[in-house]
Length: 266
Image (cartoon, rainbow, N blue to C red):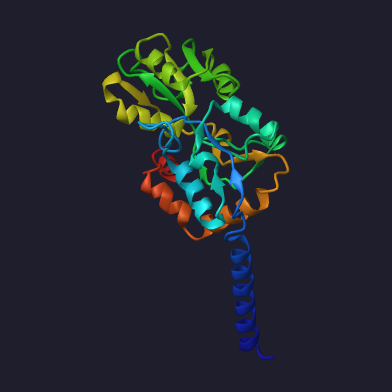
């Protein structure tokens, strides 16, 4: 066989393999009901606006596309909002199949849960009041200040390193209002929902720093029970969605900031 024929044969074989993989996944979870929970940390990844039974955002759209391709049914035809720690507890006792909503992949979490491929990367951000602390330009300006962080998050390490006084919180929205009224000098949290909140609630006089840090804490994916029977099919389908541009289109729909663009501003 000549080189030309070998190349043609290889291309055909690769195409058949890809088609076989795709058809294997399509509709594979028909007649399966999944319990899906979302932590509504905020737009654009996962949030609730008016109807609590209809969460919105990037993560929700990805789940609906997974459903379209795999044909599973959502319990009660909805995605249930839940606090992150409670949702993770459900993964551990097998009463949840998928947890979404600004869920970060970490090596520590991967020891306890299965994860989908990372579909979006961002970083942490400092939120501060432009009225109370106009001098804050980066995380390096937090020395001696009261800085909020979500209990159990790696943000506490950054606060300690910069000489700030860490103040744990349970609810990021309440913490944002505490920054606005001066109870907190600043807070550190995932950049995507903070940027959206600040741009939406302009009357609060809040701003977000543009320095890049904490990237390892902001590799977003979905979590599943360890050794879930659905991990392979869901991950295979998400990989296809990453490759065929579906997830890029969803991110673009929600005007999600690209980390590469932020880095270029440095």
